[in-house]
Image 1 (tube, helix red, strand yellow):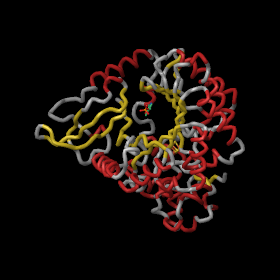
Image 2 (spheres, rainbow, N blue to C red; image 1 turned 180 degrees about the horizontal axis):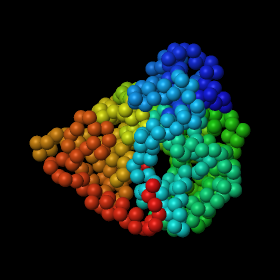
Image 3 (cartoon, helix red, strand yellow; image 1 turned 90 degrees about the vertical axis):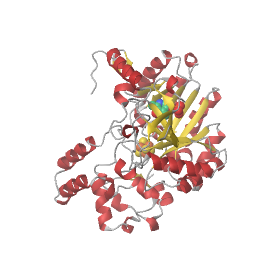
Length: 443
Ligand SMILES: *Cc1c(COP(=O)(O)O)cnc(C)c1O
Ligand code: SF4
């Protein structure tokens, strides 16, 4: 794999298809938003005759409009006057801090405490499912411009470290018999070497964790580096490690992230998905809806159809989080719902396993079911697909219609009510967490 960052992106073969101004924008915006791209994305996914509009280009290359004008001007000024690296870093960090880097209470509410210490490798928000962030998987084969996970993008660690992490994970799981699913996430856990992944998988397959029935791997590797499953030095070993899950009688779900049907059209992605199906993995797909990349019903319908054709199960359409370059990628909830509905209309029931548009927010995963009239008022109908309290799930609730809101915090309860039905209890849960964690500080 050949990888490009800010310092060497001018070596990319087709880079001169960009104007000088566009190249400068890559440098300027790329010092704030994540930038990393590899030869597969460059040679097999991006259509260089269609840059900068090409969706995969926009997905991976920083563009001027992704920063707010005042932020762009600040970085531009520093770079044009050749400011010292440290000053550029500092300005970039200050801008990042203004972009809500830890949305939806992830640290305060979801990170569990083991022996009075926070275990940052784990999040446990929904009863049945623990999210595990193996530290070796906190980077990706390429970076998405809409993503804001770089607090996590750190280096590679060794097997001894993995073993210690696996011990903490299994200690927690043993004490939580209600957990049936472990979801590996990141970054991208598929950047891990197979021998590291094996430490984690083996620890989960132990006989004293028989309540763990489903192992899920959240990954963008089929889109950014399908050769991970084909021709990397440890590709065969990786497949054998994953196959252990199936052989142990558990469900192996690959939670695949695809933003556009173009990511499903190469020979490599076809072969990689076939290899995964051949070991008995179930392939499920999910993605956020993003302006400038996939904000049209035709794109989604074509993508879901292609996925089903390749043996994949469409799972979630997400609303892009209130973080990072949301002003560029975000769209009103109203519009996301319309796109979802028009796409859903065009496909057969096999694609309609997909649920969305869904916001992962503090109370849970909130789906916009639609817009309608009730009691003389125009309202959004919503429900939770997941809830911090499982009892909240699948209860319809209503918000005042709002054409501009892009996130739940822009919505108000309908029918003159003061709060949504879950708010009092959410406050109680939050207070309880603070008390349970005692002297722990909430940064
Ligand atoms: C989405 C999500 C899960 C998984 O939810 P499912 O509906 O079971 O796929 C688990 N934990 C968190 C924090 C999530 O956001
Ligand atoms: S692959 Fe996932 S974690 Fe990695 S940059 Fe993209 S969205 Fe972020």
